[in-house]
Image 1: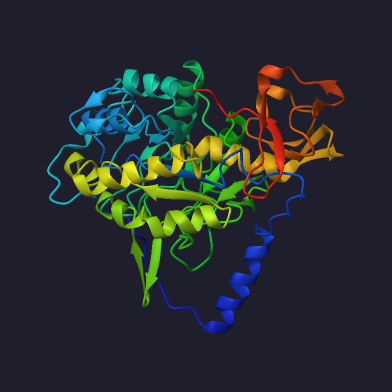
Image 2: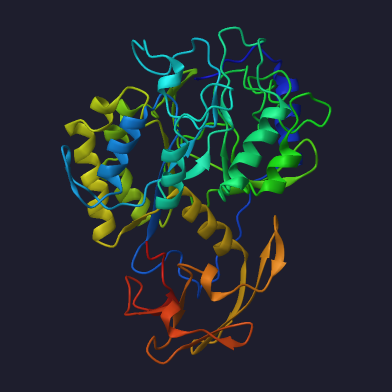
Length: 422
C-alpha cells in the first residue's frame, strides 16, 4: 500500500532533511577493477524478481512457483526452471486493508506460518518446504500488521522474539528484510525521516516499544528494502549502506517499484504490470549497460489469473530467453545481493596468469579470508583461461569450483567460480 506524505514541508527544511540522509545512507559504489568481469560468464547483467507475499494464497504460491521455478508441465505451460524467490509472513493481523481487487477472503486464507497471532500453525509446512527449495528467500517483515486505523498497532517486540525463535528452531535463516504495509506496521525501519510518510517507522528506535532490530540483525538479516521507491530499472550497483537509528549498519538495496507520473508515484508492482516491465527495451538496456535489476512485485495481489495470464507468461518466457541466451542471469534476490556485496568487497591480485583472492573487506560484516565455496560467480579476466591459476589466500582452488571461459564480447578470456548449481 502506498503511503502518503502527512504534511507539506517548507523547501528549506526539506533540503536540511535530505542532507541528513548522508548520515544513514551511503550511495557511492566503488569502481570495479578492470580485471574483474562485472558478471559471471557469459552474462552481462543480473535480474531478480522479488515477490512480496501480500494477498497470496497457498494455492497461488504453489502454482506460480511451479511454473516459474519448476521443470514439469503445468496448466500454464512447461515450467521455466528459473531461480525466482518469494517472501514469507509468520503472522497476519490485518483487519480490512485489502491488497487485491474485490477481496472478500478472510485473512486466514493467505499464506502465513501461524494462524493470525496465535500459536496454531497455518502454512508452516509449505513455508519450510519453500525455503528448502529456494522458492522463499526473504522476510516481508514478521507479518501483516496493516490496520484500518493506523494508530491501532498490534505488533509487539514479543511477537518479534517468537518469530525469530520459530525460524531458528526450524533452521531457517533469512538475510533479506522487506518493509511492508501502512503506518500501523511500526516494525518497519531503515527509511525513517521526520515529517514524511516514513516517520512512523520505529523498528530501529531503541526508545520505542516496537524496537526489534537488535534481535533481527543478531539473527542474521543483512539486506533491507526500506520502503523508498526507485524508478531505475537498471542499476550499476543496487547496494548502499544504511545506518539505523540504533547505530547498527546493514546493506540497503534499491528495488524497481515504478515511476513518477506528475506529482504521483505510479506503482508497477501489481501483477497486471509485469508484462509492461519485462519488455525487450528494458531487458536490452539492462544487458547492454552491464546492470543489476531487482523488480519488486506481488505475485498474489490480484490472483493467479493475472500473474499467469498469457500477457505475463509471454513476458516470463521472454525473460527466460535472455537467460538461456547468456545475456541476463536470472537469480533469486539473496544470490543477487550476495554477489553484489562480494563483487564490491573482494580484494585480489591478478597478473593475468595467477589470480589470488586475498580477502573480502565487507563494510557490514568486516574483513575475512573467504573459502572457495562462497565465491560463486566471481570471474576474472586472464591471458589464457586454460593455464591460469586461482588461489584463495595463497591456497590452490579445487577445479570443481572453477569455470574456464573463452573470449567474451570484450575479446578477453576469463576464469571464474561456478555459479550456484541448483
